[in-house]
Amino acid sequence: MLLAASSLDNNTVELLDPPAESEIGENITFEEYGSAQNNEILNPKTKIFEKIAESFGINKEGVATFKDIPFKTSKGVVTVRTLKEGTIR
Image (spheres, rainbow, N blue to C red):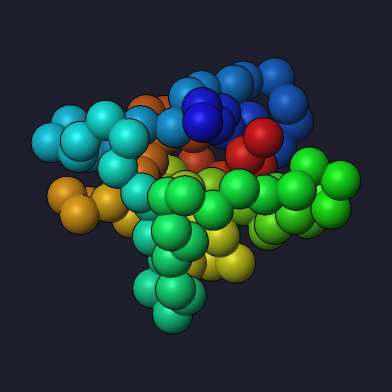
């Protein structure tokens, strides 16, 4: 899945940028939360992703977050190149 960040005024959009050493297809994890298995399929009628995505954001350091918890791979946090504070869509 490809996610992008948007500035608070919606004038700038940037793709999320995982650490360069991350593997393609690697899971994103959130400390304090478990992780889904790769074979789990979300029922699109339940709109689970849309509900969760409401809690995505970009903090003052340019790090992608879920409820203020950084998006992480095994190689570090996911960031955006220039945005500081914003939303993820």
